[in-house]
Length: 204
Image (cartoon, rainbow, N blue to C red; front, top):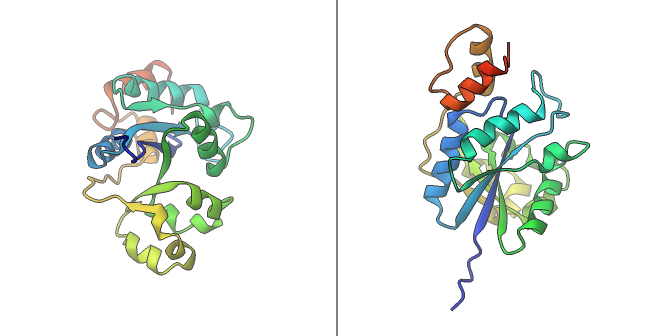
């Protein structure tokens, strides 16, 4: 009998400026926790995205590849990087769904972004068509965030609150500051990425 439960492909979006061990750890834990997830696709934003100190696309892509090449369940997509403008999340996920018609495309976000989800482009269409894995940030109570927001509560079925995850408060901003100060970032990201950053003189 055919398995009616579709395998999932989960999109992990972000600047990855630079990618950190905490990004890869979250992705790995997600795969371990949910058997239906077939792979994680890291989706770096386009360098046109308005963010301070965002380095060019090719470097963030190459750094992600260094780690993803070592994990058969990790992949990097250039869908957003290749587009002439920064895509909205709904556009990115719709493009991916066309590529992977037999899979269920899902997305990840932090509980901080969940609070603002109603303001996103085509938010209603987004959560009608795609499930979202939510990571709790800081002291957020995701269930409470959903229950106290009419829009989120009416679409509760779209959200999967990720439990039993080891979280990190480490940020790429902090890592960039350490690089500028000439401090070690060893163990904060992979050795390959540390070497790549040094070889290309990034974040100086």
